[in-house]
Length: 153
Image 1 (cartoon, rainbow, N blue to C red):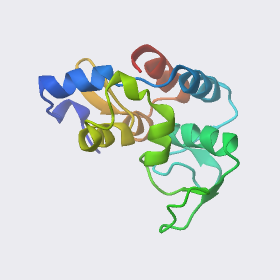
Image 2 (tube, rainbow, N blue to C red; image 1 turned 120 degrees about the vertical axis):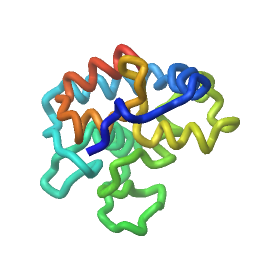
Image 3 (cartoon, rainbow, N blue to C red; image 1 turned 135 degrees about the vertical axis):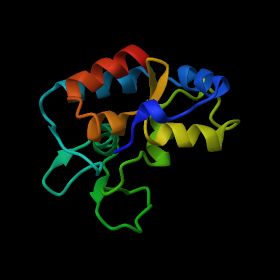
């Protein structure tokens, strides 16, 4: 298990993380979905075969439904018609849709930002933690994760 208290991050990167914000409409949809009770919480994969989702998978599912796409369990699939189910990080297409580019300028910080955004990173007690870590390692409920997203992202 990853201990987020052991991750070291410099002040410049902390400032970048604090600037990263979700688009308002996407954030509202994600919070509503996480709190709805319509998603059974799972771990490791975005969407498991038993129809459970990690918190990031819920965000992907919103995008999939809005864009008439499908989940795909083929590891080599990167097409725009489907999202690969067995990852625990956000695909770039979801990042580009969900995050407000103006809050941190994705194009200028593409490598660094994608590293942070793929896991949905935030700061808790000034320590970096990804949403998948909250979901999988720290066993936070969807409601608890929604509260963190609402407060910090």
